[in-house]
Length: 102
Length: 270
Image (cartoon, rainbow over all chains, first blue to last red; front, top):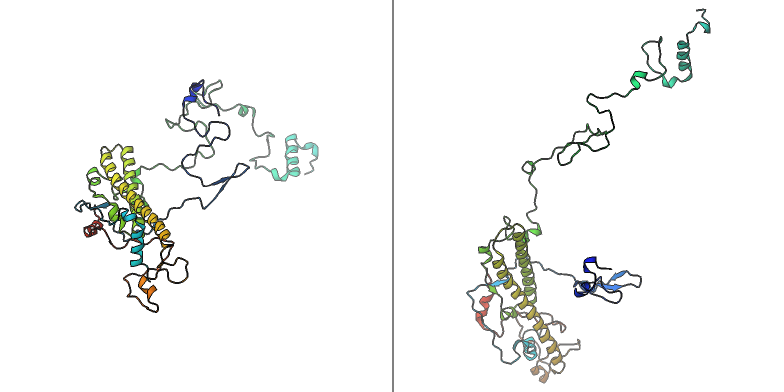
């Protein structure tokens, strides 16, 4: 593709590259993500395992809102180890206590 | 009577030939005395001109025609006599039927307005703390995420309509509300990631744990006391027993470690 006359000379080179610039081999995505693959003949095959789906659960009877009342002060948790909530030891101990034995 | 063909007049002869030759093109004539063989006469051949008609050609075929001024067409059409419907004003139209349970209603704060007023947008609490979210189960977090998504959609719809309809102020309050929702969503993502990483590390640790059997056969967890004493059965039943799936992380349903005051954090209101 060629630019218009107003951009002739070196003016076009100062602009950012778009998907329509450069001859071959230059790829610039648009942020929508890869949903499949190209065929040698210029087609496109959608790979459904790459296509994202959004699962919204049933919200009837759900009472939580995105906000917490301001009367409740912020309190941080107390953890024994330095890793705290990320500690795998704690996780395992908790699993054993709550879920280990059926 | 004893009339021969010579007594026929020429016009009479024409009538006879027409009668015998082409019976389908009969024409009703008032009398048989003077029948014209042409459909018109010389005076009628000259085209009828309307009074005030111009004698020369009008080169402009659409002269006088204007859609803006609704002049109508210049020449008559075959459908010119068809009655056309007249447009009605909006007040005369019947009211639009709306489904009261339509899902799109959730894009608006109420049924009356498209954007919330700034004083109503300001009435919100603070965002969820990560500590408060840690005690929530997957189902709760999943549902809370989508509640946040719907709230953000509502705020964005209001912002769009406010801009489009030039309704005035309210952008700042909407942005403040949106910020709190986004912080909550960030916290949800953080908690789930943290939980997953902890589970991954725990699985790695469990491979070296003598109490835990990850092969899939037999019990996954045998406490130390049981390893020492064989034959002991039946542990005291726990409150909630869920099927252990070593591939999935455990759910945080109880407030194990953090402070108890956090339990009120669940009372989330505006």
